[in-house]
Length: 100
Image (cartoon, rainbow, N blue to C red; front, side):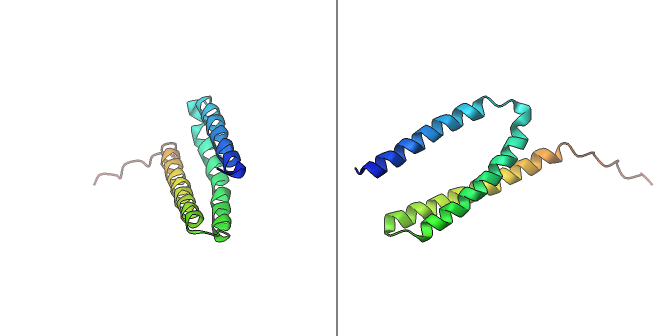
């Protein structure tokens, strides 16, 4: 195992632990704004995954980049769908149509 790979794995594990700690401390009422912000940030990660994949030099790197792009796309789209559904709950309801 190369030292670079060990560094990447260490960074990934530490980021996962920090992410879990941060998200677990957020109150329920703030989940919708937090999700919107994280979707915007993940959009940047999506662009980064595309640029890194375009510079890949092997089959394994290409497949890992493709996996990163697919997972980022699912996360961004799914997050915006969930956010939209949550915001629909706060819209005023239209009165029922008048009966004839």
